[in-house]
Amino acid sequence: MLRYSLRRFLGAIPTLLVLIALAFFMIRLAPGGPFDQERALPPQIEANLRAAYHLDEPLPQQFVRYLGNLLRGDFGPSFQYRDFTVTELIMTGFPVSLRLGGTAILIAFVVGVTAGSIAALKQNRPADYAVMGVSMTGISIPNFVMAPLLILVFAVYLGWLPAGGLGDGSIRNLVLPVVALALPQIAYIARLTRGSMIEVLRSNFIRTARAQGLATRTIVMRHALKPALLPVVSYLGPATAAVITGSVVIEQIFGVPGIGRFFVQGALNRDYTLVMGVVVFYGTLIILFNFLVDLAYAWLDPKVKYS
Image: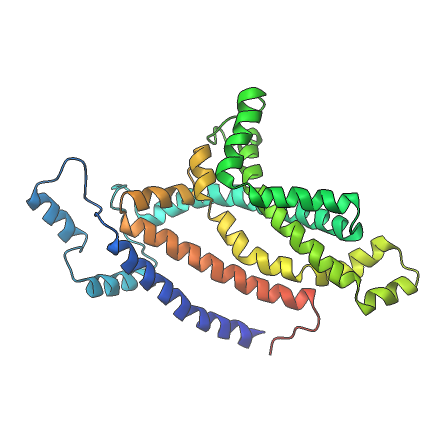
């Protein structure tokens, strides 16, 4: 296991380097710059700003400088939020995104696996059609449509919940953004669980368990659920990273100060260091969660061995 972990860690370094290089050079290909404003700065002041942030250096030299700072854990200063470093901004937004995204993915996993298992056990029956119909609806309706609908119904018409913002951080303020984040994930997980569970329930070891007279609940919980979760766990790796780091659309609609919102503002303002910091942070999380998924395979499937 240790050798496998070390090999995966070393293999992730080139992937992260390619991601950093692509993001670094692509964002600089976009028109405009971090100091472009409606009212143009005097040339001397703009030149001084570019020199202060090393933007007057050749791009390869800037890239090497950025990699050196990354090795020291320094994402650099923000060009637009002058009193903050990128690390401070990420650490400000990440707890908010983690709270919303972590709650959403946990709800999605529990509800999605439960609904998918019920659909598989009731295959081609009304319960199955109902679960798959709702799942297709959840997949088909994008977040930028579902979130305003939730606000319109539960905040405007019924007045049960706040329309946006975190307020004092109470549960009432979290309900709508968490539900909006969780709904698409519930739909995907339910469909994955249903397909995998149907396949597992047709396996020989399940037939043997039924021949021994075991109850359906025991068969599902003790024998079928773990192998049926393999494709779900594969999906949860990148999905968890995406949800936890914040949904750009959801955070903008609900006015949540998470990482996704900082990313949008950074891209609009050509805040190179802020965009790069979020990209590197997001890429690192994806690599980490995919690694955890590989380790979870050994627990879910005893046939998987790491040597």
